[in-house]
Image (cartoon, rainbow, N blue to C red; front, side, top):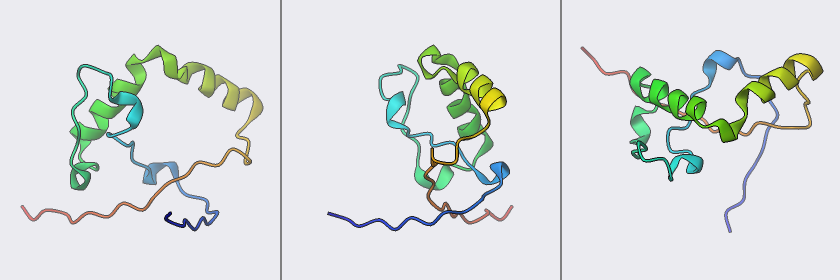
Length: 90
């Protein structure tokens, strides 16, 4: 079994990317697996956001309202992994 090491950090929301290969998307008919090195592309991020917004099961409006009213609960950690890509020369 692989061991994981976790470090607590504050990271700007602008630094996050949505995971286009989220396991929750597999049953969606428009889902197509994305190549890891393309996660940062705007079209990949926009499609991912649409998939999230279209699924009422995720209850994003309720989550947003809860955070606005109650604040973010630091005990509920968000786990992220580093993502690196090379900018293409044009």
